[in-house]
Length: 379
Ligand SMILES: Nc1ncnc2c1ncn2[C@@H]1O[C@H](COP(=O)(O)OP(=O)(O)O)[C@@H](O)[C@H]1O
Ligand SMILES: [Mg+2]
Figure (cartoon, rainbow, N blue to C red):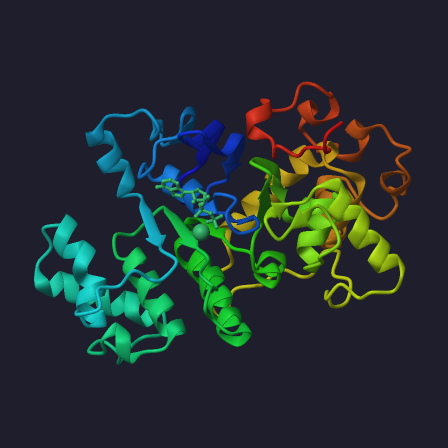
């Protein structure tokens, strides 16, 4: 199972420029998470902070008991080996063929023989659909293949955590769909913790178990996918729908005059360029038939059901609706619990788990930092 990543109060600035502050979230082990955010909100800076390439000002990022923000160089070096990173451009060496590119971390970081290296490289190239392309140079293959080669290279050290920086950038929608499937299939096969940074809405709606969003130097929310996908937070709705109308502007943040002007134009019938209204929970991508089930999905169900009563009603409804009738009985929730919809039942009753007394007692749930830090907006 992949490693858990517990991030608390992480704050980063470059000189006078604040990038984001007080980011708190937990990447649950073996689950797939997406971090959304407009360009320039510091998503890449966030990934680099997680692997200790950049030093946040304050806060902690703990992996297997090691805080990568403050640990020794030696511990950092050890902890980095847990990571496989797919950089935005694939970051392949242009003068090396795919075989040597993928073999590079093994030759650099291990004492394995060339025979052992060969079997690992060929296995990872096969996993990423690149068998037969070993001799190609990065410049001779398509963008999608380069991404997959970058992913193959990220896999050779058997990572527990995989970070992908905009894996869809430069890919057409079909290639992006294939890459999404590949990430889910990989997760089913190796149960690694995966964090994908992207502004691709389709990927965000269909791939991850958890979604977060960075905006205005803050983590707007982070939690089970159902929370963000049913959110009526204006910035989330605008982003999911690719609308101009809303708080996000060309230079990220809009002032109220600009917002009022655009609202007036829209009221007068000017179309703002978005397509149909995109909202709600769509089915999540499943592993390709024949592959094992994702272990993370089973663990996630237990985890999410424990905190169900802390989530907004629309997210609760979506989660309950995604369960099979047997699961609904197992967790003691279901269609007959109309109170979930109307909010009549006390929250403890909604999420009541058989044999989990903590779930019935508001205030006795797990410590806050373990909860998806869902925020109800600026209340
Ligand atoms: N090494 C650095 N030194 C100074 N500023 C940086 C550095 N890396 C990133 N930045 C700044 O941090 C901000 C966020 O960048 P980035 O993380 O690349 O955004 P995103 O990936 O969300 O598009 C940008 O304003 C960028 O100029
Ligand atoms: Mg970036």
